[in-house]
Image 1 (cartoon, each protein chain N blue to C red):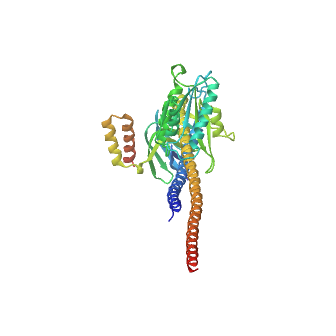
Image 2 (spheres, helix red, strand yellow):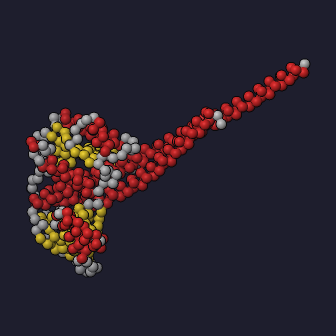
Amino acid sequence: MGAQLRVYKRRIRSVTATKKITKAMEMIAASRVVKAQRKVAASTPYATELTRAVTAVGTGSNTKHPLTTQAETVTRSAVLLLTSDRGLAGAFNSNAIKAAEQLTERLEREGKEVDVYIVGRRGVAHYNFRERKIAESWSGFTDEPTYADAKKVAAPLIEAIETATAEGGVDELHIVYTEFVSMMTQQALDARLLPLSLEEVAQEAAPKGEILPLYDFEPSAEDVLDALLPRYVESRIYNALLQSAASKHAATRRAMKSATDNAGELINTLSRLANAARQAEITQEISEIVGGASALADATAGSDR
Amino acid sequence: MAAELHVALVAADREVWSGQATLVVARTTSGDIGVMPGHQPLLGVLESGPVTIRTSEGGTVIAAVHGGFISFADNKLSLLAEIAELSDEIDVQRAERALERAKSDDDAFAERRAEVRLRAATAR
Protein backbone atom coordinates (compact mmCIF):
# COMPACT_ATOMS: atom_id res chain seq x y z
CA MET A 1 0.00 0.00 0.00
CA GLY A 2 1.26 3.44 -0.90
CA ALA A 3 2.12 6.04 1.75
CA GLN A 4 -0.70 8.38 0.65
CA LEU A 5 -3.33 5.66 0.93
CA ARG A 6 -2.05 4.62 4.34
CA VAL A 7 -2.40 8.17 5.66
CA TYR A 8 -6.01 8.40 4.43
CA LYS A 9 -6.89 5.03 5.94
CA ARG A 10 -5.48 6.12 9.29
CA ARG A 11 -7.47 9.36 9.30
CA ILE A 12 -10.69 7.54 8.39
CA ARG A 13 -10.17 5.20 11.33
CA SER A 14 -9.65 8.07 13.77
CA VAL A 15 -12.65 10.06 12.51
CA THR A 16 -14.83 6.95 12.77
CA ALA A 17 -13.83 6.56 16.41
CA THR A 18 -14.66 10.24 17.08
CA LYS A 19 -18.00 9.83 15.38
CA LYS A 20 -18.88 6.91 17.62
CA ILE A 21 -18.07 8.99 20.70
CA THR A 22 -20.08 12.05 19.62
CA LYS A 23 -22.99 9.81 18.65
CA ALA A 24 -22.97 8.30 22.14
CA MET A 25 -22.80 11.75 23.74
CA GLU A 26 -25.70 12.90 21.60
CA MET A 27 -27.83 10.01 22.79
CA ILE A 28 -26.91 10.53 26.44
CA ALA A 29 -27.77 14.23 26.18
CA ALA A 30 -31.10 13.43 24.51
CA SER A 31 -32.13 11.15 27.36
CA ARG A 32 -31.02 13.78 29.90
CA VAL A 33 -33.12 16.49 28.26
CA VAL A 34 -36.20 14.33 28.74
CA LYS A 35 -35.28 13.71 32.36
CA ALA A 36 -34.66 17.42 32.99
CA GLN A 37 -37.96 18.34 31.34
CA ARG A 38 -39.73 15.87 33.59
CA LYS A 39 -38.14 17.55 36.61
CA VAL A 40 -39.33 20.95 35.42
CA ALA A 41 -42.84 19.53 35.11
CA ALA A 42 -42.63 17.89 38.56
CA SER A 43 -41.69 21.18 40.21
CA THR A 44 -44.57 23.10 38.61
CA PRO A 45 -47.35 22.23 41.14
CA TYR A 46 -45.26 23.56 44.02
CA ALA A 47 -44.40 26.75 42.13
CA THR A 48 -48.03 27.37 41.14
CA GLU A 49 -49.34 26.83 44.66
CA LEU A 50 -46.64 29.05 46.08
CA THR A 51 -47.43 31.82 43.59
CA ARG A 52 -51.09 31.61 44.56
CA ALA A 53 -50.22 31.83 48.23
CA VAL A 54 -47.93 34.86 47.71
CA THR A 55 -50.69 36.59 45.77
CA ALA A 56 -53.19 35.80 48.49
CA VAL A 57 -51.04 37.45 51.15
CA GLY A 58 -50.01 40.29 48.89
CA THR A 59 -53.56 41.24 47.96
CA GLY A 60 -55.19 40.26 51.23
CA SER A 61 -53.09 42.47 53.47
CA ASN A 62 -51.02 45.62 53.32
CA THR A 63 -47.91 44.15 54.84
CA LYS A 64 -44.50 45.50 53.90
CA HIS A 65 -41.49 43.29 53.55
CA PRO A 66 -37.84 44.00 52.62
CA LEU A 67 -38.16 41.61 49.69
CA THR A 68 -41.05 43.54 48.17
CA THR A 69 -40.03 47.14 48.88
CA GLN A 70 -38.40 48.99 46.06
CA ALA A 71 -35.41 51.03 47.25
CA GLU A 72 -35.71 54.72 46.40
CA THR A 73 -32.28 54.87 44.84
CA VAL A 74 -30.67 51.65 43.74
CA THR A 75 -26.92 51.84 44.29
CA ARG A 76 -25.93 48.21 44.12
CA SER A 77 -27.44 45.26 42.27
CA ALA A 78 -26.68 41.59 42.33
CA VAL A 79 -26.61 39.54 39.14
CA LEU A 80 -26.98 35.78 39.39
CA LEU A 81 -25.63 34.04 36.30
CA LEU A 82 -26.46 30.40 35.61
CA THR A 83 -23.99 28.51 33.43
CA SER A 84 -22.99 24.86 33.27
CA ASP A 85 -20.05 22.96 34.70
CA ARG A 86 -19.07 21.36 31.46
CA GLY A 87 -18.73 22.60 27.91
CA LEU A 88 -19.38 20.77 24.64
CA ALA A 89 -22.69 22.58 24.46
CA GLY A 90 -22.22 24.89 21.52
CA ALA A 91 -22.95 28.51 22.31
CA PHE A 92 -24.92 27.71 25.48
CA ASN A 93 -22.47 29.16 27.98
CA SER A 94 -21.22 32.01 25.86
CA ASN A 95 -24.81 33.15 25.21
CA ALA A 96 -25.59 33.20 28.93
CA ILE A 97 -22.34 35.01 29.72
CA LYS A 98 -22.97 37.52 26.94
CA ALA A 99 -26.47 38.23 28.30
CA ALA A 100 -25.00 38.73 31.78
CA GLU A 101 -22.38 41.11 30.45
CA GLN A 102 -24.92 43.17 28.58
CA LEU A 103 -27.03 43.39 31.72
CA THR A 104 -24.01 44.36 33.84
CA GLU A 105 -23.10 47.06 31.35
CA ARG A 106 -26.63 48.43 31.35
CA LEU A 107 -26.77 48.51 35.15
CA GLU A 108 -23.39 50.21 35.36
CA ARG A 109 -24.52 52.84 32.87
CA GLU A 110 -27.40 53.55 35.23
CA GLY A 111 -24.80 54.22 37.91
CA LYS A 112 -25.20 51.01 39.90
CA GLU A 113 -22.48 48.84 41.32
CA VAL A 114 -22.83 45.22 40.30
CA ASP A 115 -22.07 42.14 42.38
CA VAL A 116 -21.84 38.98 40.33
CA TYR A 117 -22.92 35.59 41.66
CA ILE A 118 -22.20 32.63 39.41
CA VAL A 119 -23.42 29.05 39.20
CA GLY A 120 -21.34 26.66 37.08
CA ARG A 121 -17.63 26.23 36.44
CA ARG A 122 -17.78 27.68 32.92
CA GLY A 123 -18.97 31.07 34.09
CA VAL A 124 -16.50 31.09 36.97
CA ALA A 125 -13.62 30.27 34.59
CA HIS A 126 -14.70 33.05 32.24
CA TYR A 127 -14.70 35.65 35.01
CA ASN A 128 -11.51 34.40 36.64
CA PHE A 129 -9.64 34.49 33.34
CA ARG A 130 -10.57 38.16 32.96
CA GLU A 131 -9.72 38.75 36.61
CA ARG A 132 -13.17 40.10 37.42
CA LYS A 133 -14.56 39.98 40.90
CA ILE A 134 -17.08 37.26 41.76
CA ALA A 135 -19.15 37.79 44.90
CA GLU A 136 -19.87 34.09 45.31
CA SER A 137 -19.97 31.01 43.13
CA TRP A 138 -21.30 27.47 43.22
CA SER A 139 -20.61 24.47 41.02
CA GLY A 140 -20.97 20.72 40.83
CA PHE A 141 -24.73 20.38 40.50
CA THR A 142 -25.64 22.08 37.23
CA ASP A 143 -26.43 18.82 35.40
CA GLU A 144 -29.04 17.73 37.90
CA PRO A 145 -29.90 20.49 40.36
CA THR A 146 -31.92 19.61 43.45
CA TYR A 147 -34.07 21.84 45.60
CA ALA A 148 -31.38 21.79 48.28
CA ASP A 149 -28.96 23.31 45.74
CA ALA A 150 -31.43 26.09 44.97
CA LYS A 151 -31.72 26.79 48.70
CA LYS A 152 -27.95 26.96 48.97
CA VAL A 153 -27.78 29.50 46.14
CA ALA A 154 -30.72 31.54 47.40
CA ALA A 155 -29.56 31.90 51.01
CA PRO A 156 -26.71 34.42 50.53
CA LEU A 157 -28.73 36.34 47.94
CA ILE A 158 -31.69 36.81 50.26
CA GLU A 159 -29.30 37.80 53.00
CA ALA A 160 -27.67 40.39 50.71
CA ILE A 161 -31.06 41.88 49.87
CA GLU A 162 -32.05 42.10 53.50
CA THR A 163 -28.77 43.80 54.49
CA ALA A 164 -28.72 47.58 54.22
CA THR A 165 -26.87 48.82 51.14
CA ALA A 166 -24.47 50.86 53.25
CA GLU A 167 -23.35 47.64 54.98
CA GLY A 168 -22.60 45.82 51.76
CA GLY A 169 -26.09 44.64 50.90
CA VAL A 170 -27.77 44.97 47.52
CA ASP A 171 -30.99 46.68 46.45
CA GLU A 172 -32.07 44.43 43.65
CA LEU A 173 -31.40 40.99 42.24
CA HIS A 174 -31.32 40.07 38.58
CA ILE A 175 -31.08 36.54 37.29
CA VAL A 176 -29.60 35.49 33.95
CA TYR A 177 -30.47 32.01 32.79
CA THR A 178 -31.27 30.05 29.65
CA GLU A 179 -34.93 29.50 29.10
CA PHE A 180 -35.93 26.15 27.68
CA VAL A 181 -38.42 27.06 24.96
CA SER A 182 -38.33 23.81 23.05
CA MET A 183 -35.94 21.05 22.05
CA MET A 184 -34.59 23.29 19.29
CA THR A 185 -34.85 26.72 20.90
CA GLN A 186 -33.22 27.87 24.09
CA GLN A 187 -32.88 31.50 24.91
CA ALA A 188 -30.61 33.31 27.34
CA LEU A 189 -32.58 35.97 29.16
CA ASP A 190 -32.40 38.19 32.20
CA ALA A 191 -35.17 38.95 34.66
CA ARG A 192 -35.44 41.00 37.81
CA LEU A 193 -36.21 38.64 40.66
CA LEU A 194 -36.12 41.04 43.59
CA PRO A 195 -37.60 43.27 44.87
CA LEU A 196 -40.71 41.35 44.04
CA SER A 197 -43.58 43.19 42.51
CA LEU A 198 -46.72 41.67 44.00
CA GLU A 199 -48.81 42.96 41.10
CA GLU A 200 -46.74 40.95 38.66
CA VAL A 201 -47.01 37.84 40.79
CA ALA A 202 -50.77 38.36 40.98
CA GLN A 203 -50.92 38.64 37.18
CA GLU A 204 -49.11 35.36 36.90
CA ALA A 205 -51.34 33.58 39.42
CA ALA A 206 -54.70 34.77 38.14
CA PRO A 207 -54.44 36.14 34.62
CA LYS A 208 -58.18 35.95 34.13
CA GLY A 209 -58.88 38.38 36.94
CA GLU A 210 -60.01 35.61 39.24
CA ILE A 211 -60.79 36.93 42.71
CA LEU A 212 -58.98 35.24 45.57
CA PRO A 213 -60.84 34.45 48.77
CA LEU A 214 -60.22 36.40 51.96
CA TYR A 215 -57.79 34.25 53.86
CA ASP A 216 -57.44 33.79 57.56
CA PHE A 217 -53.71 34.00 58.31
CA GLU A 218 -52.11 31.72 60.81
CA PRO A 219 -50.30 33.05 62.90
CA SER A 220 -50.38 36.49 61.17
CA ALA A 221 -50.11 37.99 57.69
CA GLU A 222 -46.59 39.33 58.43
CA ASP A 223 -45.33 35.96 59.64
CA VAL A 224 -46.81 34.15 56.69
CA LEU A 225 -45.26 36.62 54.25
CA ASP A 226 -41.97 36.35 56.11
CA ALA A 227 -41.95 32.59 55.62
CA LEU A 228 -43.41 32.65 52.11
CA LEU A 229 -41.19 35.10 50.26
CA PRO A 230 -37.84 33.36 50.76
CA ARG A 231 -39.51 30.09 49.65
CA TYR A 232 -40.88 31.86 46.60
CA VAL A 233 -37.44 33.17 45.66
CA GLU A 234 -35.95 29.69 46.19
CA SER A 235 -38.57 28.12 44.02
CA ARG A 236 -37.93 30.68 41.24
CA ILE A 237 -34.20 29.99 41.41
CA TYR A 238 -34.89 26.25 41.42
CA ASN A 239 -37.01 26.62 38.32
CA ALA A 240 -34.28 28.67 36.61
CA LEU A 241 -31.68 26.03 37.52
CA LEU A 242 -33.85 23.25 36.09
CA GLN A 243 -34.55 25.15 32.87
CA SER A 244 -30.89 25.96 32.54
CA ALA A 245 -29.99 22.28 32.97
CA ALA A 246 -32.56 21.21 30.38
CA SER A 247 -31.27 23.86 27.97
CA LYS A 248 -27.70 22.76 28.50
CA HIS A 249 -28.53 19.16 27.65
CA ALA A 250 -30.49 20.23 24.59
CA ALA A 251 -27.57 22.40 23.46
CA THR A 252 -25.17 19.49 24.00
CA ARG A 253 -27.42 17.21 22.01
CA ARG A 254 -27.49 19.64 19.12
CA ALA A 255 -23.74 20.29 19.23
CA MET A 256 -23.01 16.57 19.30
CA LYS A 257 -25.46 15.90 16.48
CA SER A 258 -23.68 18.38 14.22
CA ALA A 259 -20.32 16.94 15.29
CA THR A 260 -21.57 13.47 14.30
CA ASP A 261 -22.87 14.80 10.97
CA ASN A 262 -19.58 16.55 10.29
CA ALA A 263 -17.63 13.40 11.10
CA GLY A 264 -19.82 11.46 8.67
CA GLU A 265 -19.15 13.99 5.95
CA LEU A 266 -15.43 13.95 6.66
CA ILE A 267 -15.40 10.15 6.40
CA ASN A 268 -17.11 10.39 3.01
CA THR A 269 -14.60 12.91 1.70
CA LEU A 270 -11.67 10.93 3.04
CA SER A 271 -12.95 7.66 1.54
CA ARG A 272 -13.23 9.35 -1.85
CA LEU A 273 -9.69 10.68 -1.54
CA ALA A 274 -8.48 7.24 -0.46
CA ASN A 275 -10.22 5.63 -3.44
CA ALA A 276 -8.63 8.18 -5.79
CA ALA A 277 -5.23 7.52 -4.23
CA ARG A 278 -5.67 3.76 -4.65
CA GLN A 279 -6.79 4.22 -8.25
CA ALA A 280 -3.82 6.49 -8.96
CA GLU A 281 -1.51 3.87 -7.48
CA ILE A 282 -2.96 1.14 -9.71
CA THR A 283 -2.77 3.36 -12.78
CA GLN A 284 0.81 4.13 -12.01
CA GLU A 285 1.66 0.46 -11.55
CA ILE A 286 0.01 -0.44 -14.87
CA SER A 287 1.78 2.34 -16.73
CA GLU A 288 5.06 1.21 -15.16
CA ILE A 289 4.45 -2.38 -16.30
CA VAL A 290 3.39 -1.30 -19.79
CA GLY A 291 6.31 1.08 -20.01
CA GLY A 292 8.71 -1.62 -18.84
CA ALA A 293 7.27 -4.18 -21.24
CA SER A 294 7.45 -1.87 -24.24
CA ALA A 295 11.01 -0.90 -23.31
CA LEU A 296 11.87 -4.62 -23.20
CA ALA A 297 10.09 -5.19 -26.53
CA ASP A 298 11.98 -2.30 -28.09
CA ALA A 299 15.27 -3.66 -26.79
CA THR A 300 14.62 -7.20 -28.18
CA ALA A 301 13.47 -5.82 -31.51
CA GLY A 302 16.74 -3.84 -31.68
CA SER A 303 18.97 -6.87 -31.04
CA ASP A 304 17.16 -8.92 -33.74
CA ARG A 305 18.20 -6.49 -36.37
CA MET B 1 -71.82 10.83 50.79
CA ALA B 2 -69.96 12.76 53.40
CA ALA B 3 -68.61 16.16 52.50
CA GLU B 4 -65.04 15.99 51.36
CA LEU B 5 -62.19 18.24 50.41
CA HIS B 6 -59.50 17.86 47.83
CA VAL B 7 -56.01 17.59 49.24
CA ALA B 8 -52.74 18.07 47.39
CA LEU B 9 -49.54 17.40 49.29
CA VAL B 10 -46.81 18.96 47.20
CA ALA B 11 -43.07 18.90 47.80
CA ALA B 12 -40.67 21.22 45.99
CA ASP B 13 -39.72 18.63 43.41
CA ARG B 14 -42.80 16.41 43.10
CA GLU B 15 -46.44 15.91 44.02
CA VAL B 16 -46.37 13.52 46.96
CA TRP B 17 -50.04 12.73 47.40
CA SER B 18 -53.36 14.02 46.19
CA GLY B 19 -56.91 12.87 46.64
CA GLN B 20 -60.17 13.33 48.51
CA ALA B 21 -60.23 13.55 52.28
CA THR B 22 -62.62 14.29 55.10
CA LEU B 23 -60.16 15.64 57.66
CA VAL B 24 -56.60 16.95 57.63
CA VAL B 25 -54.63 17.58 60.79
CA ALA B 26 -51.41 19.56 60.56
CA ARG B 27 -49.18 21.46 62.92
CA THR B 28 -48.82 25.19 62.32
CA THR B 29 -46.49 27.49 64.22
CA SER B 30 -49.33 28.39 66.55
CA GLY B 31 -50.54 24.86 67.24
CA ASP B 32 -52.26 21.88 65.68
CA ILE B 33 -55.05 22.64 63.28
CA GLY B 34 -57.72 20.38 61.89
CA VAL B 35 -59.34 21.24 58.58
CA MET B 36 -62.66 19.76 57.54
CA PRO B 37 -64.73 20.50 54.45
CA GLY B 38 -66.18 24.00 54.47
CA HIS B 39 -63.46 25.50 56.63
CA GLN B 40 -62.88 29.21 56.16
CA PRO B 41 -60.05 30.18 53.77
CA LEU B 42 -56.81 29.69 55.63
CA LEU B 43 -53.15 30.28 54.99
CA GLY B 44 -50.70 29.16 57.65
CA VAL B 45 -47.06 28.38 58.24
CA LEU B 46 -46.34 24.73 59.04
CA GLU B 47 -43.95 23.40 61.62
CA SER B 48 -41.92 20.29 60.97
CA GLY B 49 -44.20 17.50 62.00
CA PRO B 50 -46.43 14.69 60.87
CA VAL B 51 -49.53 15.55 58.86
CA THR B 52 -52.51 13.23 59.12
CA ILE B 53 -54.95 12.96 56.25
CA ARG B 54 -58.17 10.99 56.74
CA THR B 55 -59.16 9.90 53.25
CA SER B 56 -62.74 9.57 52.04
CA GLU B 57 -62.29 5.80 51.71
CA GLY B 58 -61.73 5.63 55.44
CA GLY B 59 -57.98 5.17 55.28
CA THR B 60 -55.35 7.34 56.88
CA VAL B 61 -52.35 8.84 55.17
CA ILE B 62 -49.54 10.12 57.35
CA ALA B 63 -46.70 12.17 55.99
CA ALA B 64 -43.63 13.78 57.49
CA VAL B 65 -43.49 17.40 56.45
CA HIS B 66 -40.48 19.66 56.97
CA GLY B 67 -41.28 23.35 56.79
CA GLY B 68 -43.94 24.68 54.49
CA PHE B 69 -47.43 26.06 54.25
CA ILE B 70 -51.01 25.02 54.47
CA SER B 71 -53.55 26.82 52.36
CA PHE B 72 -57.24 26.14 52.11
CA ALA B 73 -59.84 27.76 49.86
CA ASP B 74 -62.84 26.56 47.85
CA ASN B 75 -62.69 23.13 49.49
CA LYS B 76 -59.19 22.68 48.08
CA LEU B 77 -56.40 22.18 50.54
CA SER B 78 -52.77 22.43 49.54
CA LEU B 79 -49.92 21.43 51.74
CA LEU B 80 -46.68 22.88 50.41
CA ALA B 81 -43.48 21.55 51.85
CA GLU B 82 -39.85 21.76 50.93
CA ILE B 83 -39.50 18.12 51.89
CA ALA B 84 -42.42 15.76 52.36
CA GLU B 85 -42.42 11.99 52.73
CA LEU B 86 -45.27 9.55 53.13
CA SER B 87 -44.96 7.33 56.16
CA ASP B 88 -44.71 4.15 54.09
CA GLU B 89 -41.81 5.64 52.11
CA ILE B 90 -39.80 6.11 55.25
CA ASP B 91 -37.25 3.50 56.17
CA VAL B 92 -37.48 3.28 59.96
CA GLN B 93 -34.01 1.87 60.43
CA ARG B 94 -32.47 4.54 58.28
CA ALA B 95 -34.35 7.24 60.12
CA GLU B 96 -33.13 5.82 63.42
CA ARG B 97 -29.57 5.82 62.19
CA ALA B 98 -29.98 9.40 60.97
CA LEU B 99 -31.31 10.36 64.40
CA GLU B 100 -28.30 8.79 66.12
CA ARG B 101 -25.94 10.53 63.77
CA ALA B 102 -27.66 13.88 64.19
CA LYS B 103 -27.52 13.51 67.97
CA SER B 104 -23.82 12.76 67.97
CA ASP B 105 -23.12 15.60 65.52
CA ASP B 106 -25.19 18.02 67.56
CA ASP B 107 -27.11 19.01 64.45
CA ALA B 108 -30.40 20.27 65.84
CA PHE B 109 -32.05 20.64 62.45
CA ALA B 110 -31.17 17.14 61.25
CA GLU B 111 -32.19 15.72 64.62
CA ARG B 112 -35.61 17.34 64.36
CA ARG B 113 -36.04 16.07 60.83
CA ALA B 114 -35.16 12.52 61.76
CA GLU B 115 -37.47 12.69 64.77
CA VAL B 116 -40.41 13.83 62.68
CA ARG B 117 -39.73 11.07 60.19
CA LEU B 118 -39.70 8.46 62.90
CA ARG B 119 -42.88 9.78 64.46
CA ALA B 120 -44.66 9.68 61.11
CA ALA B 121 -43.39 6.19 60.37
CA THR B 122 -44.38 4.71 63.72
CA ALA B 123 -47.81 6.37 63.73
CA ARG B 124 -49.09 4.43 60.73
